[in-house]
Amino acid sequence: MESFAIRRSDGERPVVFHLEGEFDLFTVPQLEAALDDWTDEAQIVVDTRGLTFVDSSGLRAMLELDRARRARGRSVVWFVTPDGPVKRLIDLVGIDGDLNVREDPPD
Image (cartoon, rainbow, N blue to C red; front, side, top):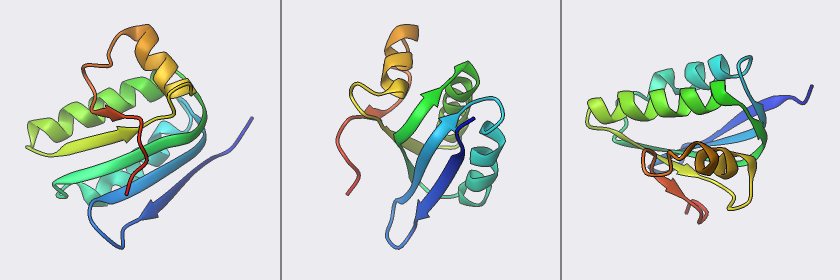
């Protein structure tokens, strides 16, 4: 099993969380814990370009995080690789309009 890692860049705003490895049922709690301290930020960026795998649990966590932040007037920007596993799953499920997905790199 490939590992999962989260690296945070918070020198400037918005805060960027860089995800690497496999995002699945077992690693979702790690992202949730990492984001707990940042609930008051107006916007956060989650860079998924380093993910090699995402399953339905990871996708569900992305949707739930996005919806929870929108309900509080906050936002999440998801950076994806155009041909990567996250974008493929989003397109397959047909939820590309439900998430703020961008294919260009964070500044």
